[in-house]
Amino acid sequence: MTKAFVFAGNDTVGNMVADRLCGAGWQRVGDAGAADAVITYFTAQNALEDAYFGDNGIVQDARKGTLLIDLSCTTPTFARELNAMACVADLVAVEAPLVVTDVAVPDAFAVRENLGCFVGGEEDCVTAARKVLDLLVAHITDAGGPGSAQLARAAYSLQASAQLVAAVEADALYHAVRTSSDMGEIAGMRAGALTPAGDALLAAVTDGRFDGTYTVEMLMGELTAALTTADDADLILPQAEAVQRLLELLAIIGGSDKAPSALSLVYREEDACAKEGLDWTRAEQTYGDHGHDHDHDHDEDADWGDDFGDAGIMDDDGMTGAYPGFN
Image (cartoon, rainbow, N blue to C red):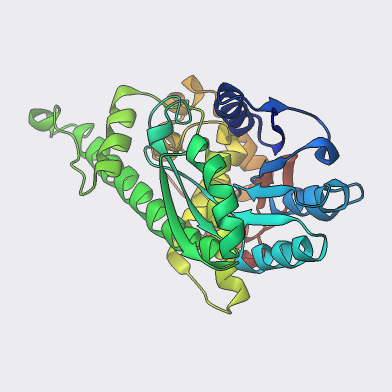
């Protein structure tokens, strides 16, 4: 008998899920009540909550015994709440936050070997979900009970985002020195990287590859989940907050659908940004008098920290309210 699945959330991830499951003989349907498995991936917490707990949400509509697999990056608190609600409704819930190994390749979701996940939940639920997850990703890390996979993913997100910005700023340094008038003799040099991920990102920047299926919006969602997890534990993470502010700036000037390599453009000249469809006047409109002068002649009195504190984060529906950690 053919098994049926429903996907809700991001279209790029949804297409990947559909390709893999339909290729294995599953059928995609539109009603959670007719599905054997419901798979979700959202970049915004409010959209994720609405999908599961809203009117006619998944928990309400799914029939007993349905397998629920959430690929989103969210908080351990939400994962435990979903598990508890699923148990009450006789559903089988598993958290399996998705991991893209190489975020610099143009089609990051095309190859199964480039995808992994952490998985957490009740042991029998995880066992039931493994056959589906094995179709979607090549690398699965068992984290433990409900909430554990989201905690592990948050820790991964903090380290991955820090490496990304470190590589981007290393490139910015080399770019600034190479373009100075008295350094022409080292014009061909490129910043090195300490990790394969950093090297892949720097190669994308050097080649001018700023578009891809893994986007800044996805990266922001992952880092927001990590910061919210820290906030729930009353922990301040200054480095991660600084990275999120940079990503918010890139999103504001039009880069939310760009690949993470586009973060390097924040450090480049305005004409380089314009060639990639980025518009610095949007930042001026958002931040008022403290707009970014891309010739780097900044007003020494500008307080960028205060301005970024009022910036909204991007979700699946566009700009929403300020990230709570910045208030």
